[in-house]
Image (cartoon, rainbow, N blue to C red; front, side, top):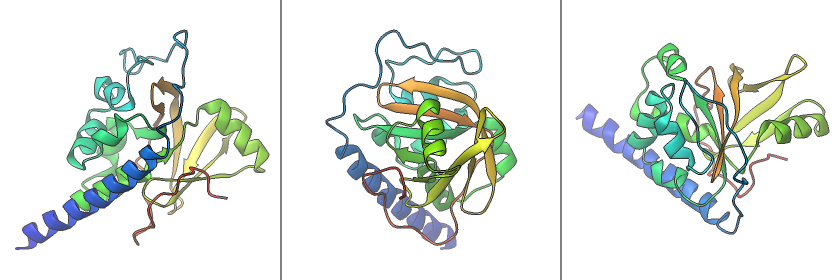
Length: 205
């Protein structure tokens, strides 16, 4: 009985998050492609990340993101990340997932949507915003919570979650036809209470 109740709760969380992502995606359907054909992405784990692919296809091709790609499938978020919207995905590596330990399906769904921000934020954009905001940028996530981006030294950007945990961006600016992937070295998490669904902007004023 407990397993059935947990599965039902997880499915409900995934459905709520899928609806939020769909709403965000619909608000960006008029966006133009982010890239010209001349863009060259960094390699990830020896695998080419192609700018003409969508976010989900590049994550699925990365040998460093097998756990995240599977988690996105399990939580029903694949269609949103293959849509014509614009998103930034802060993508933990398999090593980061191993360090995070076991997660329930409901917790996994919330964490995955917490790592997705509506809008495309490459490193140039993040650096500009950090400078403009005086050191901290609050990014509103698809889960409804907030990630804070700030500098870690003169050139590196780190993210801080709502619990004070921090992750460095390990690989910057994997451009996709519907957004940007930033590879991070920790699985960040929202606070325990469920947040409101995402607004149409990725920056929390």
